[in-house]
Length: 205
Image 1 (tube, one colour):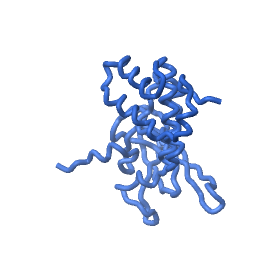
Image 2 (cartoon, helix red, strand yellow; image 1 turned 135 degrees about the horizontal axis):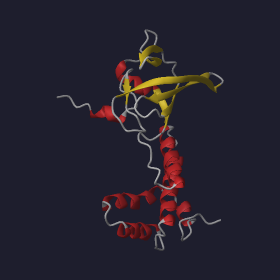
Image 3 (tube, one colour; image 1 turned 120 degrees about the vertical axis):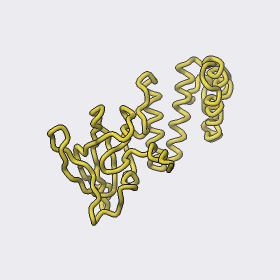
Image 4 (tube, helix red, strand yellow; image 1 turned 30 degrees about the vertical axis):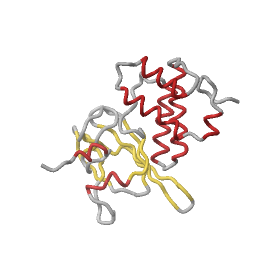
């Protein structure tokens, strides 16, 4: 049988169904609720598409530099709209998802609300930076999220490695591999940034 696991990493499977980032359902029907266009630059336009999941009714935002055709259809006796390939559109059913360069939520799955807001926002911003290829911003937000975590959990230690080891011991029920990954995040830090960190994980001023 063919391996179609790559479809799980997409928002849009085809013109009829998508993977909802809110209720985490696969291959669920969606509707294009709203389309707007604005000037990205003086010579380039960008389209905003608001998508509604037919399962949880939550809406996500998707940006594209393409004007994608839509068609109407009936769902529960109501008129809805969905994407449809047009002879002037340069895409097929298989690459619809590739037409979008930025989506909100930026992560395929919504971060659990039990995670502190400041950490959620930093992770979301980091993922957004990756989407836009702003790698410096992505690494900075990721580091800041980790430092906020160490502060919140009152991690003890005189340096980054010791604080991560503290968390590793504190949360022994969690796979230690995750903390091993966190311990290497500091390798993305510049020497200047590391030297400016205070003992509580914040930047000295």
